[in-house]
Length: 192
Length: 192
DNA sequence: AGAGTGATGGGACTTGGTCTCATCACTGTA
DNA sequence: TACAGTGATGAGACCAAGTCCCATCACTCT
Image (cartoon, rainbow over all chains, first blue to last red; front, side, top):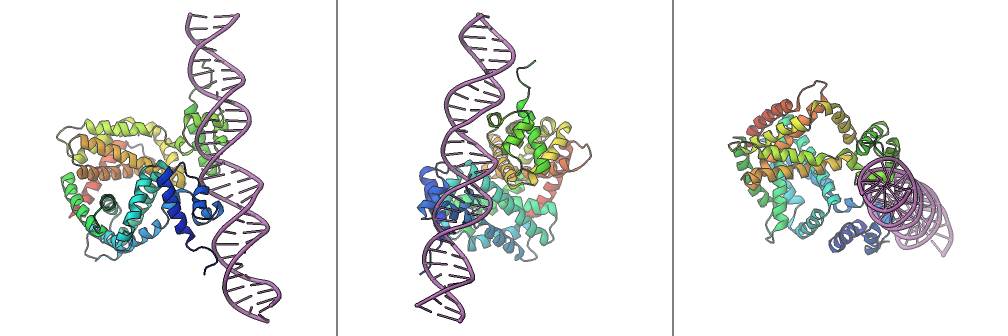
């Protein structure tokens, strides 16, 4: 037996997501979230730096997975291929089928609120920065890294939209590969 | 003679930017800003919805300029060319030489604070959405629009970094054209 | 002269977020 | 069994962001 109910952070995340979905983000106070989780405001802020972050904690690990996936790509892989390698890793370690339902609900809540969209936008920027850094470590030039990362971020976004938007149990990696092909084709036309 | 000191919003913007540069964003209260502008907290929030927005007001017009520039591009222009046409318009109407010093100081302040970076990230997302919408109105497919816009956003970001980072009085449009050429070249390699 | 108008000031109020100190349940050691 | 240590939690004061309502004030129009 633990001294306290275990997994306080996870309980807070679940409580927050449920409440945001029920009443909306603005109409939910931090005290509401804490109470539903059987905790207090103090404890909430001990686990999360602010109210928005309760839906984004753990995102730092995704940047690591992506960066490691890019770094682990074969030396012969072109920049965009290396990014695709990173996306595969994310599909294997982060966007797993068991988390799909949660991700979908979370995404609906985020889309409905400007403050949450804002935080998501910042996380996206930081993610692209991490990806670009990983590419530069492979010897890719600055501009080429940023181009590849920009396209890779779009692939990830499209894939994530489709993965959370369908009822099918499709694997994220497969969706991402399909999105990559489409982006590649559109890119070729766009640059022509 | 006006009843009150004119240009209250502009005075608030200048006061805010100066204070943020002097003491930092976090150490500056809205009351500090209002007082330096000879106003009060009430009036601040009458002109800006929140503290961050004081550095981003007017950004909505840039989306309009971009969208109109894209719409005004020749029918024969490829997606990325249309975006470049929009960037030209921005260089002519928004990022004019007279605003360069202000833009540079503003960018330094934003880069130093997470809350401001967050707002900037959201504005960037909304900008790309506006650009993509303008492209789709030209009959460009959804994915192709997003690819072109993603590359166009990178061009704008690179150009903006260089335009605000140099002491030269270079025109934004010229810097953007140069950045576009580099992105195009890197993109061709990335897709190979 | 007097009513109307629009920007401003003032202050109460809620909530996010910080900080400090107390509590409480369990652990390890004597 | 006794007792100090530890780590997560609770309680509450406090500050700043943001909302709201109402008063004021300077100027305009009739």
